[in-house]
Amino acid sequence: MEVTSKFSSYSKFAKVQFVKRIRNGGSLKEVKNMPDKIIKGEGLWNGRLLKFNTLESTNVWAVQHIDFCQNGDVIWAVRQTMGKGRLSRVWLSPDDKGLTLSVVVEFKNNRIIPAVNFAAALAVNKTLKMFSLKGSLKWPNDVLVRGRKIAGILSEAKPERNFVVVGIGLNVNMKKSDIESANFSFPATSMLIEIGRPLEMDILRKVLVSSLEKNIDSLFIHGTKVVIDSWEKYDWLSGSLIEIDTPAGVIKGTYNGMDEQGRLRLIDKNGCENLFWSGDVKKVVAVD
Image (cartoon, rainbow, N blue to C red; front, side, top):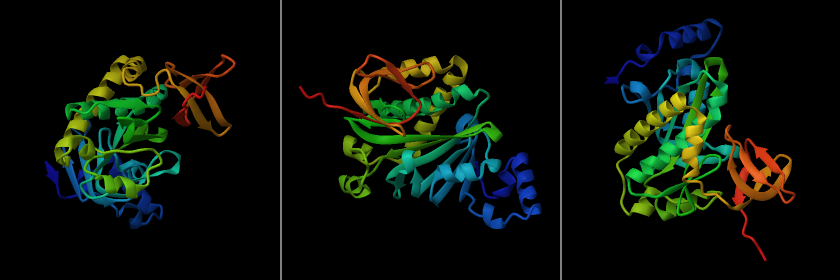
């Protein structure tokens, strides 16, 4: 059901926060950038779809407007101009060429937050499989096809509301020329390039949202182990020599999967195991 009155669709909590902002001297500019459409029943768990024709970043909007968000909201930008990726990278989405959305998920256990990111990557991978594409997963947040990046995930926690915002960028109808002009930091591809035909964005979005809902439900019911076990089946780094770029410098070693918390396990040249919450990972080609 499409809702034409934007303010009427906000939760009671959001309306109260809106009034508080204005009473405390807040500007209407803070809340002017509202969705072009709010559609009930097309988010997670029958929640809301907040659709923007154009938006700088779905993740940034969700984080800045967390008081207006509800559990299960899906924020979707048809065109994204300054998408937010890891390590301050930008994820652009021209009209009808990329699927960029963020989902708002309520959590009760902080330890489960990293696994939400993995559950989202698995949902993207499951979606690709439904379109006859074989994907793989690169820790901590990339989805690949034939070793080329097709999607990325970025999660940001908002503990004051017990929410985590999970952003997803999927290259859908991008041509080779679009990929080249985007200047990605990692070799990239798109569903159009891999399948050979354009896809209908609405259908793809609904398939992805359904997969997200099932994966996050499974995570909350069964815990992180089920997500990490599933990840291992598609792990692109499995058994590889790798290097990870961290604030302390670049560390090389053998990839040894993830621990139960989702940290990367690396065995260094001394045989010691090192654990990492984050970092930029690359495969290393062994030289005799």
